[in-house]
Image 1 (cartoon, one colour):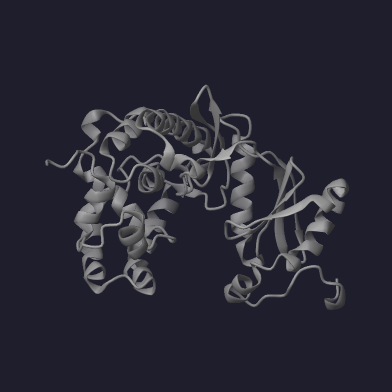
Image 2 (tube, one colour; image 1 turned 120 degrees about the vertical axis):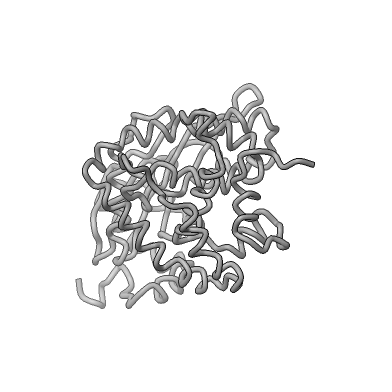
Length: 327
């Protein structure tokens, strides 16, 4: 397809994409074409842009989602597709069904089902303790089933996780410096990671993890005055890994500073009480340090709102402490 008839922009890198990302008109021609290609012609006039997320996502009517990835994120599309196809219809809550996939002018895309429900993030802060408890326990069981179901995809690939940990550990200080973390945090990172190591057991059995289990990727429905989980979506960060990596995201976003909820979550997943110790707290903080999207300033100042914290140990306890602090 020559430049005059191109449906998608030519970009040289992430900066170009970020600049174009918010502009709805840039993406509509491609969305119309994808609808036509996959029998969704009747939905061309019902396309609605979803603002959240790093990809370009449109709803097509009430039943379909079109998710477009930039050319340099082909691996992320493949991961999203692989996980969605493996878990569809096999978890206790709904996940998207992949109807079609393809590539348009070098831009990969997925056409999938649109899940029904309310974003958990819209109601989480309004829920009482009992309702939160039931949700985190159900989430833990769903996560356990997810890890069990996908373990076969990671069989024999344990070294991939070890290499990931080693690479992210080497880059950790540089990453957080680029995110403008204060120097006193940067100086503590190497020792904290060493203290938390190893970030996998000697007899590691890897599975697929994606480090983004939280209320912004979960859907709920209300029944008899209580909210319950009904949907899970967005698997493009999936990779071979160790199950605890996924505990860190759920703990950070949904259970931070609430040791009773975090303990209930871990017990529901299948951990024994004796496994809920300080070393687990440190490992979850270490996984957070290694995550490519985590910003220490944002976590401390805006998420947990404790700007006086000056050490990573204090931050770990504020987020992932498994026992209530004495008054």
